[in-house]
Length: 102
Image (tube, rainbow, N blue to C red; front, side, top):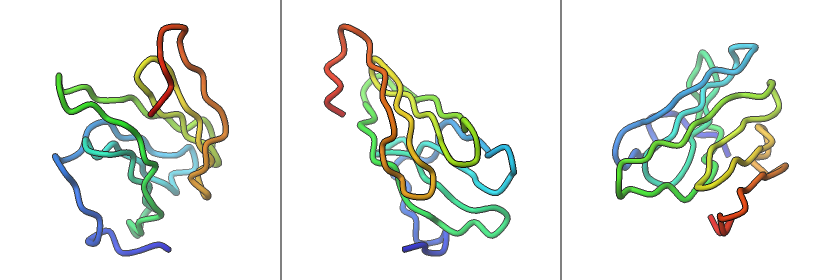
């Protein structure tokens, strides 16, 4: 259920960010456990895409909107594509040496 942006807790700040092609959505890595999705311009929090973000080594995972329905999120050794409105995993591409356990 969407909540106001003031209810979103940030562990270490924010990392990478992206705006959807229609400029209706903002996404950013929270440097703790995933990617936050908010609406624009109202900053209503739609949810968090849970992602295993390594805090050792200060690794920031990349994010980019594919279109207004999908977002690409970096992963250790690959990428994942999520449906924006459901936050469900739509596809993943993992390198040959990655475990894909995140």
